[in-house]
Structures are given as structure tokens and as C-alpha cells.
Length: 263
Image: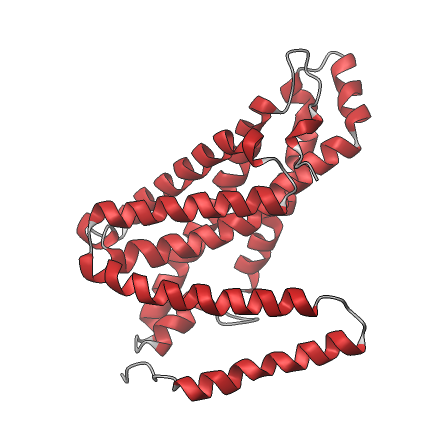
């Protein structure tokens, strides 16, 4: 099959100008997000450009220690973004959430050994792209899960106290909040599994086909990554919520509001 078409730079520049359409819509609807959109778009372009350059060097070096170091960098950046966008304190919760994400990614990468040889999965060409795909979904699901858990606990603290006063343990009192947060985090993933291939062609499958792979090979990779993504979501949300409780309550079981980011 043919190799991937090389997009000319001038064509990509013209394509970027399509951002003018949502800017016009924002202007028409008086949505004051134009500056945010422009900053986000510029950051996206610069970050992807930088990633493209230094990933080329990482792929050439293909050193297992550098590969795993890059995975750890992705985990740290994802953790900062998760806590920031969830409105939670990095200082209070990061020592619990980072181990949760390292453990999750470790389990998921180990699961790839069912399919790949160690030499293959630990190579930069496989480890970093696959790690990046599961990391992106970990980020999205944990923003939803942690935000829902802590915001609902803050809003319905009297309900939690009532459970405790009726003799429930802290774990029993928190179970309804964990259940709601967990369901909110994994619901989009379940919906994605149910509509995969019917509503839209997924990212990895599309990339494989554009890269010249056969559709059948692309489907096998997509099935693998969807299972890995769902495993990542399921484990990371539960671990992050469970472990983060360590600094969220005092010795008397009272919820500590300082887990929220100070403004």
C-alpha cells in the first residue's frame, strides 16, 4: 500500500486559517473566549512541533531508560493538568495521585506483553505512542472522576456526615460518592466502545490506514488499544479517588476543604 501523504507546509498554514470560522462564530455570539482559543491553538501548534522534533531523536536513540523517562514525564504533566482542571490542590493530592497513575500505566504496559515481545513494546516506536494514547484518556477520565467526587462531597457533606452518624464507616459513607464519580468517568468510554466503527473511525485505526496498513491489521491494533484505554480508565479513576482520600479527611473523619485549589 502507498505510504502516508506528506502534507506541504503551505497547505497546512492555509488549513490553520480555518480557525477564523469559530472565531467569527465566537464574535457573533459575543463569547469572550477568542483570546483563550488563540492561545490554546498556538500552544497546540508549538507543542506538537516540538514533540515532533525531539521524538525523532528519541526514536533514533531508542534507549529503554529514556523511553520510560519520557513516560514518567507524561504522567507528571498529566497529573498537573488533572488536578489543575479539577480545581484540586497539587500540593495536597499529587503524592497520592502520581503513584496511582504510575501503577496504572505500569499494569497497562505490562498487559501489552500479552501481544508484543518485550523488545517490541519497550522500543520508543511502540511504547511512547501507545503510552500517549492511554495517557490522554487517563487525563480526561480522571478530570471528570476527581472533580465529580470532591465537588459532590463538598456539596453534599451533610449527607456524608449523616451516614457516619448512623454508624457507617468512612469507606461505607463514601461509597455512593465514589460510585457516582466512577460512573461519570467511565460512561463516555463505555459509549465509545458501543459505537466504535459505526459512528466514527477511531484514531489509531485511521492512523494505521493512513500509514499504509491494511484495514484488518488496523482493526486488530484498534481493538487492542480500546481494551487498554478502558483498562486504564477503570483502574486509574478508582485508584486516584481511593488513594487521594488519605489527605482529604482528618483523624475524626471530617472532610478537609483544603484539598481544593486556593484562588
